[in-house]
Image: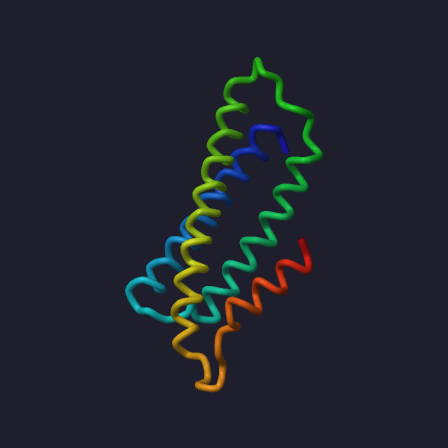
Length: 123
């Protein structure tokens, strides 16, 4: 597989991951529920493929500054990954809010004084 093919496949995978994050975001926003098992399995599959893709990228020689096309592909992939990370952070916050309402009545949040004490020990 050529350098360009590997980069193109990586970009396509990043686009699939972004679409998966958008789908999860839609479910969280509109349906106010956690994603179903199929959506979680799809995401896990895509993340496993991302690990393989990153390994393949690591085996390639460094991109020369003269290779403008490869640099542009890498920049697009980096940009897409940043978008994915931002969307995943938003999804995580929404999921936490949704599942917090589903806590058993006996579950309570720790007191802020307790958290300060814990953090002061580790600092």
